Image: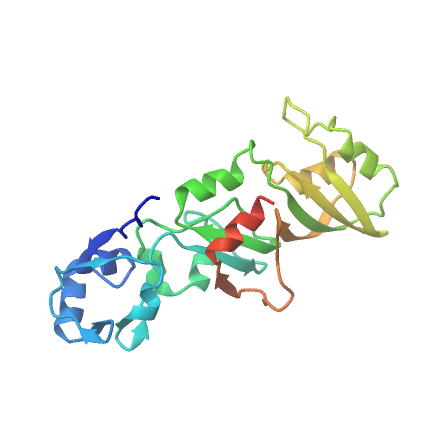
Length: 247
C-alpha cells in the first residue's frame, strides 16, 4: 500500500499573488496588516511555506473572506448572449463575469472551446491544462449538444444527412463526423456533435440552405446545464463532476 501523497507546498506570498490577490509586495503588506488567517491563527511571515490543499478555502481567511480556490480550478458558466470567450477579442468577455482578481490568476483561466458572441449556454473555464486538452481532443469524442432555432422550417431529411458522416463544410476538405439531430418543432432542433470546428453548427445548417437565428448549448458530454443557473451565473465544478463529462 502506497503511503499518502504529501500535498504540494508553496510560499504564502507567491501563492496569494498567483491567486490574484496582488503583487508579492502587496501580499506582504496584506500579511503585515494581520489579514491572512490559516487554521485560526494569524500568519505573520509572508515567506512561510504552507500546504496547498483542496480544502484551503475552508482553512484560510483573507481580509475576512475565504481564500479563493487554488489551482486546478474549473468553472461551469451559463454564458449569456453578447459576451465573448477570448481574452483578445474586442467586447465584454466572460472573464468579466468572474471576480476581478481572477484575471490575475496564474496559471491563467481559459475557456474550454468557445461559444461565439451570439451563442449562449454551457461554458467551461479552467486553469487545468491537461483537463482542457482532454476535453477538446478529437480522440476523446466528447459530445456537445445544442438547441438551434432556424430561419426556415426543417425539410425532413436533415437527421439522415447529418448522421451519414458525409456532409462537407464550405472551404474544408474532410467531411464531418456523424451528428445526431432531433427535431423539436418546425423551426427548432437539438443537434449533438463530437467535433469542434469553427462555427460548426451554424455552418452545418448553412450547408443545407438554412440559417441559425439562435443557438444555445445545454450539454457537454454527460454534464448538463441546470435550469436554475441563470445567464451570466457560474459555479465551481466539483472534482467528481469532471469525470461525468467523459461518461
